[in-house]
Length: 538
Image (cartoon, rainbow, N blue to C red; front, side, top):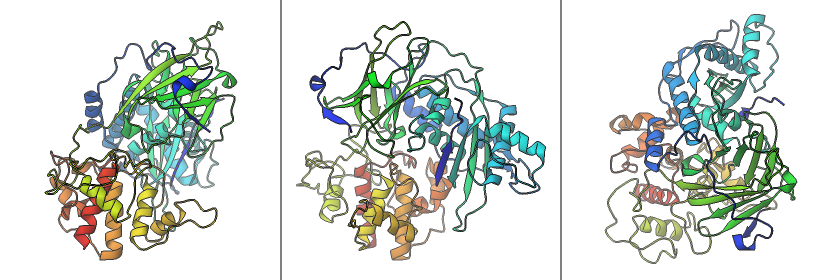
């Protein structure tokens, strides 16, 4: 379970650009973020991602808080705070914004807020006071909850909360993306972070509550045209999934409040495929699919264009050009513009390294049936195995999309079919419902965030859970992760499964033996690990 609550203050057409009637595609090309900050190179971005990983395996708390009488705020460890601040710094720098500082006083306030949420057991900016909580503790907590982004997640960490705020694309938050816009506020100068565990549910799952102080305007805004996510220039595809919404927050000194009815947003891929979203049409908020809206709420920068295409691929790769028509200056002049986003996968070379074994197959596979899988590709045999054994197929049009991603529920469905489960939907059931139900029932997955892109540590954990279910596997006695250069970056909930995968020789890391556990697993990597996993069990 993952939930967010943000502080409240106030059908896509597939066309080529030439067919887009009434759309000006020759608008000036601009850059997002502060003009004073140079764009990062792909190498610099990859380095920042290595320095500020999503996982955190250390002790989150120095002193445990108490969410029951007698209430106590506790204290978050400096390592956990710095890990979250590092993640926040990474995100802001990618967006072309200055970093923020961690304020001790705001952090203490935020901690009271996290404990109040844990006591309340849910997210609210104005939670009621528990009868046995004294008034002073409650007022401190309420001050924080009414001034912060709020997060609730199962077995969550503070860095994960930061990433959840920047995602913000579920149907409840999609119309305003308020969490993201607070995180990307150009005039934020400092913040505070709070973190507290809540009670376990009857199912035994632990929930954590996090607060990020949002109401701060102590920073120097600087000159900018707009703040975009994903930002212009090189951008890591691992931080932006296909079902997440794009956002463009306009500098109110340079742009008038955008009128939705006058807007046209065109997203053009480097192969000239274009998606056109028109403000004159109606788009319903959902967890996936085409969407276009304007929000003028005061979440950091007030005037925000929110859009999401109906993609024909599983992931963003390569260069996309965004063109926005129908904007005006405060004086009423036309002010449309374009910007470019170059999606890349950090660490991915032109010849990808096999994640489990850098050696090539002795006999390269031929005749995979996919136009984008060459016979001498390191994953050719694995793709052929996956297709021949009906584990999963291509993406249509004789393409396998080896560099694309899979969602969590896709793997759940694959494993369900492997187990002999009939996943064919009945009646009006969604395609994934039976696979999802099987995975949760058999404890293969917690079933949360089914449409999120699958990471390598999630892949490892699900395969391990399946091995426990069908083959009686158990974790190795020796903790093999300790011997991997980035073994300590594996999330705490994934250590057992990832350790087992390493112990079995199924997961060996890259050429430097790095696991990159939070990296999105490519379809080729999934095919390779499934192939090796099943052959090992034969």
